[in-house]
Length: 289
Ligand code: C5P
Image (cartoon, rainbow, N blue to C red; front, side, top):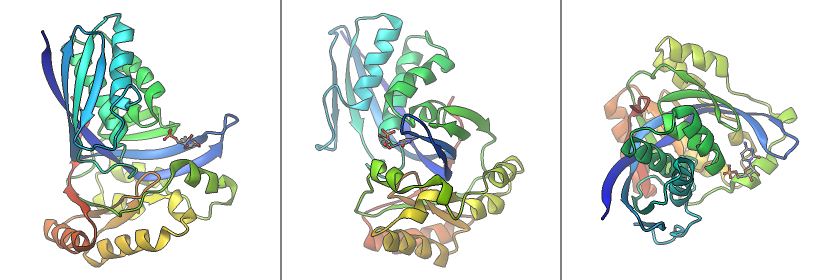
């Protein structure tokens, strides 16, 4: 006997990313604004009573054992509610991998949300977030979605109002950037530019799309080395086609451009997709139900 449930795992972007300080444990204290977008992975779960958890996906190179973030999320959920259930999880991935778009975290969070709904919400959101924190840095945000100001490791969150409707073009170049390597390059005391997070929050609160787009910024862009030219090129193409703002997301390598016109977004997408395989036109997504 098994029961099938499904959930969408939405990608995230960083409208801003600031590295505030290095903490004694070597991790960094961050200040970021997260935004969910309409690009999603499909997460299908067959819940059974086998006690085993398996994961398969359309991408052969992803781990399909207990180390997969979706498997870890299911295991943590069943442990928390004290049920010896099993689950066969099937992922259909669309979110680019190693892109700074929280793809793995989105899948883990979707598993937690879907199981919690199926079992009639035995775990409150605060507890679900604390389970998510142990699974991956972006899982807490991916549990709630929408537009959020996050500090610490990204798990201390304040919800913000939804940003105005717009088109967001995303382009992931073929290379990826190592997250630990990028953190190693950052010296918080020497950063020349920081995002205007307060201005960004005010623009979000007043529904000012141009004020938001003008302020999107990621401090990791300032420590790019061999990757810089590609990232700058993608941003330049976005701007040439009328983007009102563009930035890299997370530790890259995906870049997004915000547009107030669908035609401009389409023409940026058309040009970028001639050169880059992973391009998408997306919309902002509101807080998950
Ligand atoms: O969170 P994730 O496992 O993707 O982080 C990978 C690495 O990035 C960590 O091992 C750490 O070196 C660095 N990191 C950090 N501060 C954070 C998040 C990640 O220094 N807040």
